[in-house]
Structures are given as C-alpha cells and as structure tokens.
Image (tube, rainbow, N blue to C red):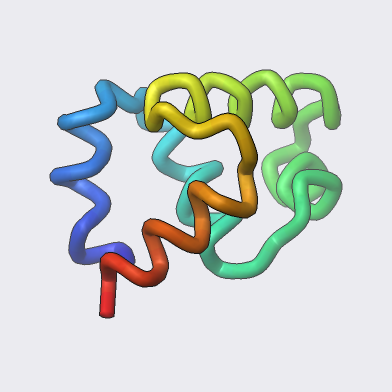
Length: 73
C-alpha cells in the first residue's frame, strides 16, 4: 500500500498526518494504538480517521481499508 499512497494522498488531498494515520491503520494498528504511537489523544485520532473516510468517500472504516488493500493486489 505504501507504493500507492502518494497517488491516493494526492487524489484525496490527505494531509501528512492523515497519510501517517492511514498507513498505521493499514499496517493493522487500532485507533488506540495509533494514539499511543503518535502521542495523541484518541479523540484526535478518531477525528483524523473521520477526515480520511470523508475524503475517501467511505462511511465505514473497515470498508475503506479493505478496498485499499484489495486495490493494492
């Protein structure tokens, strides 16, 4: 997925932070783990995830991640 991230980030206009959060989600980290890893509050991470979902046109995080992982193959 990392190879395709720049194109997705540009198409969705993701910030650098949103790109990092997306990569961590795709690597299997939970939102709680991401918050600890990035030394941020869970609500901050949830807001960033919601922004990624909105920009990606998704209503469910799981669906977004699955579609990105399938597209990678």
